Image 1 (tube, one colour):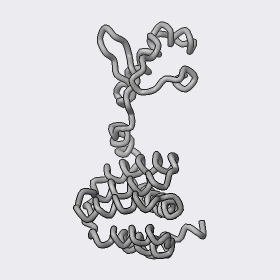
Image 2 (cartoon, helix red, strand yellow):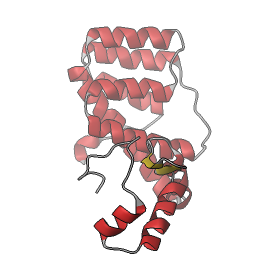
Image 3 (cartoon, helix red, strand yellow):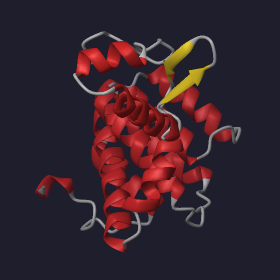
Length: 194
């Protein structure tokens, strides 16, 4: 219904009565469903105004779901692996699509210490210009960060070597720099076999 009506975050959703009629269910069922959506942070009710779709890109839902999904070690490993694979594929795309000017700006930000690891890879993935990869990475990053693992401090030099490889459009050097940055074996990150 949200897609059919073209609703987006900030838009008002139909009233309980209208939802009940459109969905062919009782108003108590609609009320219960709306309450559940509000608890998940997907909608908000404003007294006297109605119910509105929230910007659910925040990590409230991720934190809630991660308490259930990421309890076993296999799921945690899958999140880590998938996040790394997306980052490497985006490096490959960035080699083709990222302009010299963008690379130079990123080098300056790294040298001045303005970027943490998430911000660095956000810029790379943004420059890879694949919106689906970006969305998937943002979700996985939020899941990964919700694990509250010990944050690894990366060296600026590692980022600069990676950016140098991007500027040279050298895929092997970029992937090698990435593996070194993440302390990964080449076997664990060889996506050519997948």
